[in-house]
Length: 387
Ligand code: PLP
Image 1: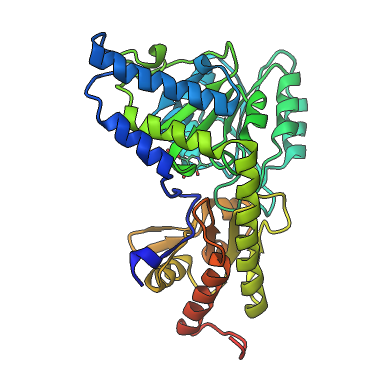
Image 2 (image 1 turned 60 degrees about the vertical axis):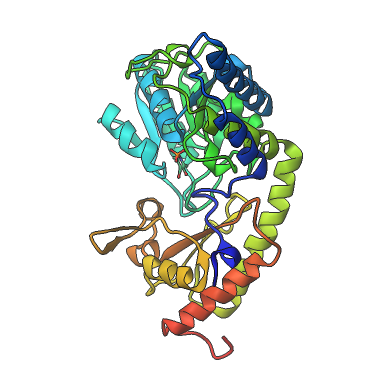
């Protein structure tokens, strides 16, 4: 199968670049100046940067001064965590299903952080968190670090509930909204989090750009000083072409109508994929299927068939999917998130994720299921006769 006809179902990892983003990038690439320079070339680059800030702010319904551009969500999350640390919030609660960008860094910043347990869908347990917060002594200001939706299972997290818990105690919330943006109406969640992070390449913009969005007055503390860009909040010359592409993608992807269209199209393909597999594979395990979840994400496990082998088989057949399971030194490790969600190792190690997106074509869900079933048959998986 040529790359032209490949079936791409890994939008939660990186979505396809939108034409509007590519065009904005090409225009910005023609500029020579550094946006911090005062000459005409610098001012031209600065104008593109500030226009991108306005566009992103308008798509998110925030003030442009509350948008800080970074090299991606990872850096924005680290800046948010550094800022929360400097502001003295404690104790710190982190969801067990957070992306490594949060998980690994929060562990470094707060070795004594408390992990919020997950249910089988990968959703944090709000009752556990409520009990833990209610048990805190008076006068402490907790920090909760929590994603909007889980990247592996698609489970939507109870953000409104958690915000209410945190606010009552004068605490704060860092929200990794990377998987919410463009899939849910992310502007509605802005007020919930003191620090909220989104990433360009998950919404059809290029890699290499992200943003930290803060509520008015929320402090930013940069522990990596340098050129003082982004009003001193983040050092390093901004990646103007990537940021221009990011803003163009945001303008196209984040509005309510675009999100409604995204939901309708991706849920149709995702449901078709799941239904076709369910019919043929009685041993299939669905993860988060009955939970509130993103419209585009399917997470299914076939115990006995390692995730890495499924992905390679599908890749050879022309389709791109992924897994939370990590492969290092030739050994497949089960997904940390699925293990934390209480799934046994054989499920966590055989779970794959199909994530559809804006460029998904009608029929992709059905085609992906057919490719998966054919690959299962070649792998000599026990399948019913009709497959
Ligand atoms: N948070 C979540 C939930 C993600 O899915 C990802 C990317 O996979 C990140 C953070 C990191 O984003 P970036 O690649 O922009 O650093």
